[in-house]
Amino acid sequence: MFTLFYAPHTCSLATHIALEDARAPYQLKRIDFSRTEQQSRDYLAINPKGRVPALVTPRGVLTETPSMLAFVAQSFPAARLAPVDDPFAFAEVQTVNSYLCSTLHVAHAHRMRGYRWADEPEAIAAMQRKVPQSVSACYDYIERHVLRGPWVMGDTYTIADPYLFTIAQWLESDGVDPARIPGVVAHRSRMSERPNVMKAVAEEVAPA
Image (tube, rainbow, N blue to C red; front, side, top):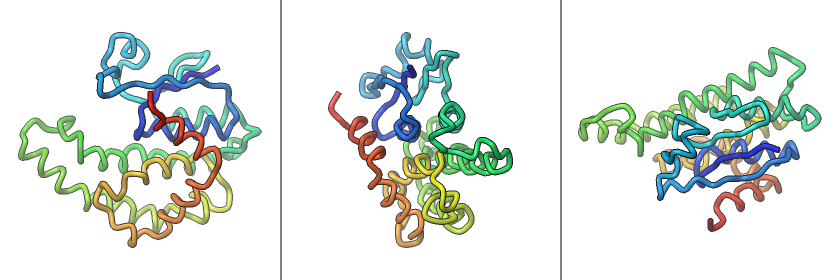
């Protein structure tokens, strides 16, 4: 049994969807940001970073989305969520997920979490003004060089799909014009129609 610590409207949704896709045994534990539960003593004992998601497994805790997605795919190979038997193809999936984590998600975070990188209000405001440009550039790259077909890696659904879907929920709020990235928007729509995605989204936004 796994335990996924999550908060609504965060990247925890990607792992939540993957767990559903894998038919993995798991339970959910909601972290209430309005009560700063991510900084509570109990949660910091699980994830000292004070962020979500965190996935508790029988072997320990995982705290970064790319590692959690890879873990789910490798733990449940029958679900075929990644080409785990092909080192190069698996690395390609990890390349996509690493970009989503280290570049796109970070650019998005400058809109509301500039305090992580600067203290001066004017510096934080400058970062916020840059978000539509920087995030749009990320999506332009994904549209032109990453998205290969109906799914991120082409004809085969992988763990890259729930991750892109999750982050793409925020693109309008980041000031991105959806018209410039029709492939990403079509992918988001395609994902939203999958039963496992609908189930995970409904569970995360349900009242606590």
